[in-house]
Length: 179
Image 1 (tube, rainbow, N blue to C red):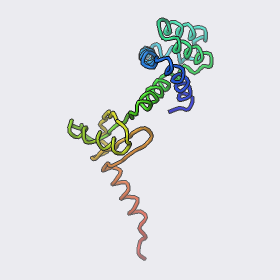
Image 2 (cartoon, helix red, strand yellow):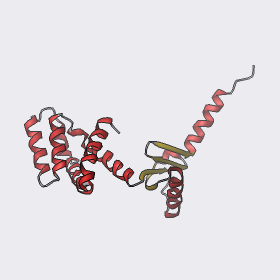
Image 3 (cartoon, rainbow, N blue to C red):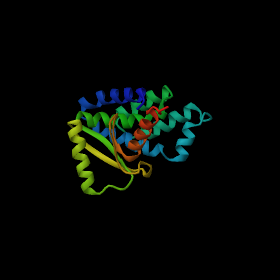
Image 4 (tube, rainbow, N blue to C red):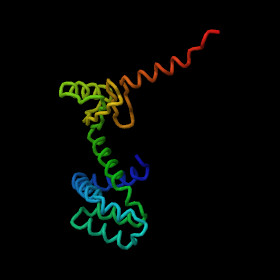
């Protein structure tokens, strides 16, 4: 996660938390990031040909009806030409809110779709490893061949066949040849 995005998210968190506005701010940011994800909007805003006053007007309109903290964030980010960081700010804010609640997000990657029992077991293991409540998403990555790769925050737990084979390959290359 980009350091700048985390700084914006931390500032937003510190401003919203005492006001009890975290959920409203998060919902508003999610809605705006979703709107900005449309190809035509994203292309127009990221184009160097788009005049800065036009970008400012777009964010002013996007801020209409949004929480005052979100509108303020837009103003600062547009002024500093950092509006492209909004998706990363949203991700960092969501992570910060979950951390405040003692919840960690993670992703379980496997070569095949995991069933409910496997996900329940992985969630239990992740909670034991972190000491926190963990919510896991899943992703199928056929190149892993088998096993599971679990990413929680910045920590990676890799129990995949692909990694085991790569480790074995490295060990075999390190063995001195007789002669």
